[in-house]
Length: 200
Image (cartoon, rainbow, N blue to C red; front, side, top):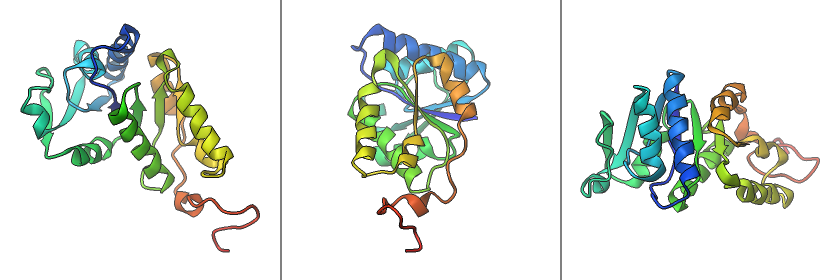
């Protein structure tokens, strides 16, 4: 199993976030899964890699060339894949992943998360998307997305595209219990008036 983890590079956030990232890395490695992440050495990126390395886990780091020029890459990651830009990095992170886990982060993490949700809505990604809700970080975002559903920018079914868990220990069980997304997702990607169908 290849688990794509989106996470931040900031070293200045609360220690609880770093602890959760390290623990998640440990658990992914202990499960025999491969951690696929952004290749960095700092912040939650470094912590999740360190956790996996502590258990001799397999890691794939995908990092843009410009980040290696300022030595942001993790020196302990053997399979470090250097790509040309952020766009290619996002594509490679998601390609062939069996699940996405979004840890708390800033605009880069949120951009990656929203792209994964969008691709799932469009029937281009079918696997679990799990938000690790450390310190209730994602509670406001989840409420906002539910508000978007209430305002009919998405359907109630789209609210099943992601889920929240509170602890690293809950991540892998949630991945395993989440069913594959609908193969016909494109048929209900467009929000329609009540009583209408794709054929109408």
